[in-house]
Image (cartoon, rainbow, N blue to C red; front, side, top):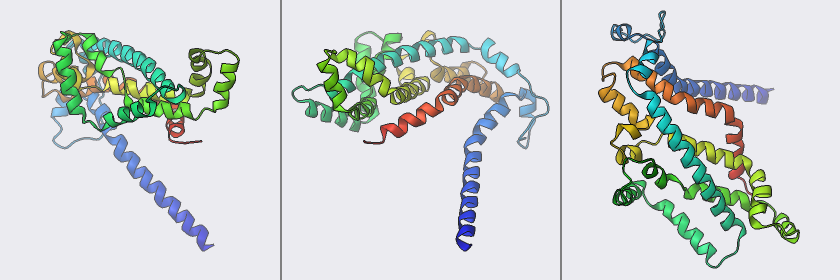
Length: 280
C-alpha cells in the first residue's frame, strides 16, 4: 500500500514539474502572440504588463505586409530553403550510401577525416566560406547563399548509421538479381530509412529558415534578404524600435510556418530521431 502511495506521489510530482516546465516554454510564445494583437497605443499605455487583452486587433499583421516587404523576405527564404534542402538531400543520401555500402580504398580514413571536420568551429568555416564566395563574385546572389549550406557532416553520419542497420543480405540478394547500386538505393534503402530522411529534411528546413549569420554576412542588398536578417531591417528601418506590437506580429508570421511544419510531422521527427540513435 505504501509503495502504491509513493508511486502516486512520485507521478504527481513529475506531472507538476512537467506542467511548470511546459508553462515556462510556452509562455514566451503566448506573450509574443498577445503583444502582436495589442494596438500600439494600448501597449504603450500599460504601465503594468497585462496578460490578456479585451480589444484585440489585426492592424499589426496588416502593417507587417504593407509597411515593410515581408512578403518578399518570405519568398526569398522559401527559394533558399527549398533549393538548399533539395540539393543537400541528394548530397547527403549519396555520401551516406557510399560510406555505408560501397567498398573503396581508404573509406574508413576518409570517413574519419569527415567526422574530424565537425570539431572545427563554425566561425572559422564562415570566414573561409566568406572569402571563397566573395572571391568568386557571388555576394548578393542566391548561389552565394545556398552553396555553403548544401552539405552536412552530421546528417551524413546520421544517415550512414541508419543505412548500415539494413541487413547485408538484402544488398547481396539485390546484386544477385542484377540490381544496380543506384536502383537498390532508390528502391530499398531510401524507403526503409524514410523516417530518418524526413527528420533530416525537417531539421534542414528549420536550419535554413532560421539562418541568420551567413545571410547577414553575405548579403547587403535588400532584394536578397531572408526573413531572419529581414526582421532586423524591419526593426531598424521599418516599424521602428518603438513599435513592439508590429514587430511581434512580423515575428509571429515568420515563426508560424515552422510551428505548423513541426505539428504536422512531429511523429516522423520523433521516429527518425529515436531510430537514428538505436543500433541493431
